[in-house]
Length: 511
Image 1 (cartoon, helix red, strand yellow):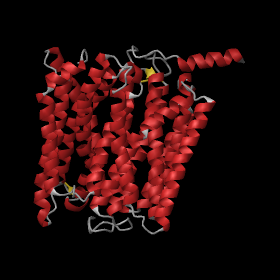
Image 2: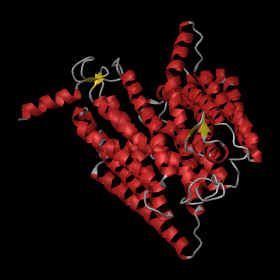
Image 3: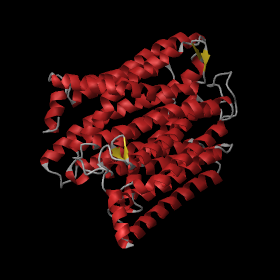
Image 4: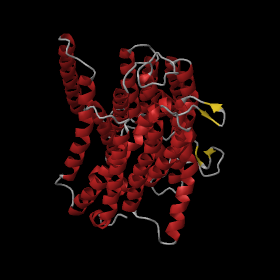
């Protein structure tokens, strides 16, 4: 019996030879399990995300007058703030999510628990009312944060270390699962939610996550045994200290908000503003802590100084990019035509455009870099960041044109938004993969596993900036603000380009 178990463990932990009977496009069979799990999780995530800003404004002054009611009738500014906070929290919670996988449950159990939390969140969102909405949104954010880092870790476990020649290809296949789910979700969940019932749409997102969890449990035997291991389990003393601190902060929050509610002072901003500020303070605090660590070598400190340039640039990029699901989504709902070539569609379908462009353009951009590299003309990391910032800025400068056209009530062609999403996607493909790569290359040895979470904090910082501006009364849906953001991104791109030699010097041997 013991011998049989040992053989089973060996079969699960060792990679299947390319082209073997139990392969998935030449990769270990476990990749199929993780691909399908991630595809269905992204289906639920992006489907709900496509409905989120539209549900928040439905029945209010910012919504298309011909659309269904039944939403929360919020202003566009409040909807943008909530949407941005939600995205920021998903990426912020990826860090504690990775911590749970490393120190409490192990990646495999963490993914199972997080999937159940996400499913519960979508089911809660399917209930009417403001209370279930915010409760469900919190559950989905917590579950997504727990899942995000751990499922990627399990992909890495399928291969024989970083030198396995199939490893990069495996992550590419896995990345395609994200985009397949992201593309299909608005077409299905968006259509049902926007045309029939918001809450039925949210329930469909729960079904998507349930299918992902079922797929994961069905194929879990094909995963590496390492995925069940807790790499650095908490000691009893650490566990007790963590529980005490957590309960203390929970008690403080409960008392504080209980007093606010009891005295009748509480408003939605009492929840949104503190969360936004936390999302801005934590990235700064984490970067400062790492940069000032006295155990780092002089070279590592230099690299961290250079990395701050990339971090700030990424925050500016994501601040604009993620408005594709809020500012641009609201514009598409109320000021863009819902027909193209005689075919009608709900405005939530705009959220399928970006993943479609990614699937179409990613191979092209990758080929361009290889083609330039063969001629020793491939742009460096700083140049690619500058390109990404210029393009995201240009997309909002182009956005000004349809906004001006629609100012008199005219509904513009959908091709305006399709074109703007294309520009943003090229910018994303220039900046995002390079950002992931440079993060791993510039990470100090002491913080090697944590630096990927630091990269995600750039998204948190960008989205929290958007939220804070909305809560401060800045109309992010106005032409002047959109123009300002576009110019700001172009200036940031120019700064990166101008100081590229200085940044390159700080990077040391990283290129």
